[in-house]
Length: 110
Image 1 (cartoon, rainbow, N blue to C red):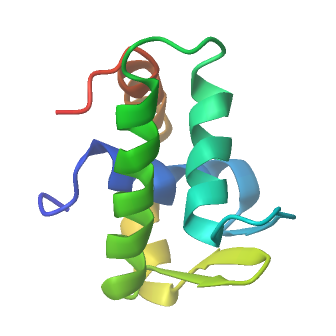
Image 2 (cartoon, one colour; image 1 turned 135 degrees about the vertical axis):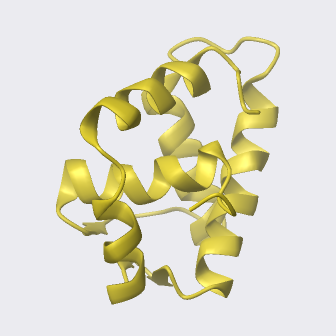
């Protein structure tokens, strides 16, 4: 779990705690990663502070890494936790999830 940064842990916990491991979405012309990164950021940050773009690009990188290490599957209009991703997500307790949410919303990514 130490290998995952805040954004990666947040994505796993978000999918697990909020959606039970799978989320369907509709997107426009951008890539799935870009759309989901903006969606996640917009849920956390209502206005556009100076760190907004840094959070979006961090989420894009997090989504790519989680796919690369088979923690999530991202196909077209669905993102799901793999069985490995579920194991890791279950280790992230609700209070840690809330803390991650608060930190990211304030731009504290490290």
